[in-house]
Amino acid sequence: MAIVGIDVGSVATKAVMMDGEKIFHHTRPTGWSPRDAALQSLEELMNASSRRREEILFSVGTGYGRIALPFVDKTVTEITCHARGAVYLIPDTSAVIDIGGQDSKVIKVDSEGRVLDFVMNDRCAAGTGRFLQVMAAALGLDVTDFSHLGEGKTAVQLNSMCAVFAESEVVGLLAAGCGKEEIINGLHESIARRIAAMAHRLSIGGRITFTGGVAKNEGLRRALEKTLQMEVRVPELCHLTGALGAALIGRERLS
Image 1: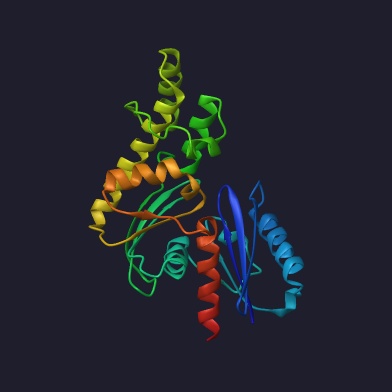
Image 2 (image 1 turned 30 degrees about the vertical axis):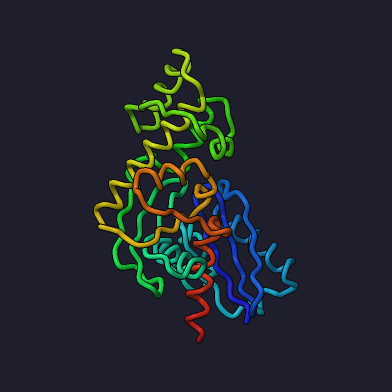
């Protein structure tokens, strides 16, 4: 039984196929055309699984670009999909933190992966993957460097979370002789405080699962644990959580 979930994000498009006990997946940059990125990811799944398009029993689209997917059978919000995917990957999850390219979300879930409540920041780039990319460019680094740089270093206090003003602040800190590691820690702690404020609005407790591609940033995970004073876990397939949740919803639709 081949079921497909496609999560079209602002930065990356992720596709997952659940074929019996097997899971196939593919990730690619979204680029300028969400529809083309989704179709190309779907084609990669077909090649990897040796399936044909007509053998897909059900498909679900999610993410900001889901409206550009007329070929899927159903579309579902990424909040619902991340909740379902997170609980599948880590069954005792009670809250999900998802930091995407354009927004960040804190989601309170039940034991079945249903959404109980959520808070979302989609008004500005602060605390998102895009924010980290801009800061990495200002530091002359790749955003993947943020994961390991800064461990054991102190943090510089940053006063602005606006992507434009924070970039200028980072440039000024570099000119003043501040180390890149301290600045990175300061950025992580600023994001963690912003996420913690969202989490406190939901009065979350229990176990937190960190999803999305940004969850691969170990430095940010540590900052979240420190600020929230709670364990923050990252599943191995963190970047696929939304697409996996979409596929799970499709499978349930057929059961």
